[in-house]
Image (cartoon, rainbow, N blue to C red; front, side):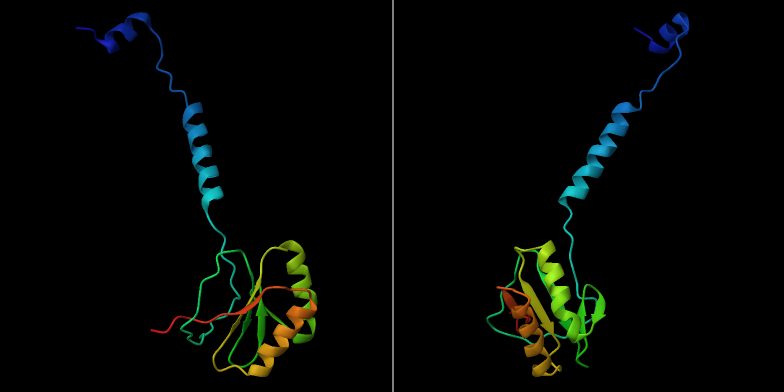
Length: 137
């Protein structure tokens, strides 16, 4: 029977472990996970959405604008003054021209604030503006 250890001792060759294929494999897995993960944007505040029987989910990357129950407006996890909203929407649309705008308004927020946000979206040139709702339970 062939004894590998005895043959190696007879030739006096040191054992070598090649790490290159292992490192290559780790980098390939890292690239795979980076490419396949999806980035989820949020408004940065917890909002209680109203329920709607006709609610549908949107799959594309969208610009999210949140309105809290005390009528504060949030975009990209920071509070925005309503007067500066149009400029922020224009900048976000320049980065993502294909995405639509989704307004996530709390069910206790005032309708006038939501209408004002929609107006700023239209003035910024947005063609697809939606209001978020949750499915009824």
